[in-house]
Image (cartoon, helix red, strand yellow):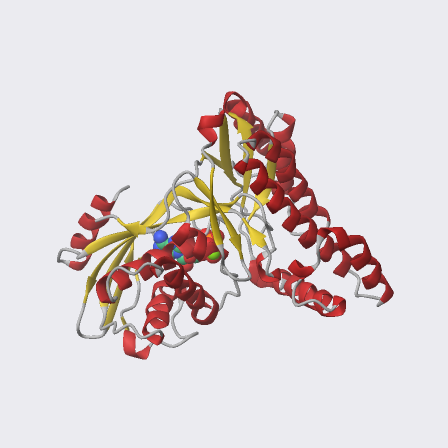
Length: 389
Ligand code: ADP
Ligand code: MG
């Protein structure tokens, strides 16, 4: 898969050469789950798997969308785009065109062709990859030219497309990660003010491997589970008198839990608070360890993060728990679910020499349990979104 292939496919589908090709990666969050809507910290890295958008400007208002995996979408008119009106996958790129137009871009129509190696619906943010690649393409075709802060701005517009146009209430992490991650780094992101810090992490240089395990269990965040936890976190923050749970320091966790008990705080609040407060601390600890070149020591923090998501936040599932248990049983240094949970993917940190055994153990455990065979691939922190042709 390459930019060249996207160029060729564009010509075959749209009958003329494209003006350029833009790529944006999927992402894995190394640590910092369900912290983003609590104004907390996350630490994603870009996958080598990416989405390519080949594009050409039009002047007649038409938006013609084609995807190698999803086929051709009904033709749209950029002047008539409105939230909730575009069905199916076309809502993602159309939503980006809508968000960019609302931000002042003079988009007069476009032909797009999409190629991707990011598995869709696996919790690896194929949606953000598609949005961010589209945003870069439309910026390339209709934007003001190179600007220093273009990537985070385009990421925010992509997030707006997913929130307001597609109707998925996601935080900013996925789009910022796809847009702003850099090769050989994890991204330490403060989701309150979007302050970013690139932390060098080259697993191979340490004799380590990061494995991504796609359980192939469909994650469904739209079923109310996400919204209920988000509302619970916000209510707990109000009860504690803080703007967001990020403002509860780790040292005051016990006091905060007591205070919630005193208010008769609704059943699941203490567990939600405990997860968010300890998870923010784990992000800080992992950042310090990677910064000090001590990546191995981050392993147990990943596993502790999984236990917290499983037991306190209750967003894991049997398949994700099995990945973690079987990977650790085969000698992995750490493992956790990544993304929204209820299926989707897990990330595993292992010695390079043990990666084969870990992979075999996970696959074997899935076969024994009668689950579908998981997709397992190694993934070093890779480049973020950029123009590739
Ligand atoms: P995730 O972001 O975890 O992969 P989502 O449910 O958020 O899962 O997004 C997946 C959806 O994004 C797909 O169902 C599809 O509508 C759209 N999508 C992603 N990649 C592509 C692609 N290459 N072509 C067409 N649609 C895509
Ligand atoms: Mg998504």
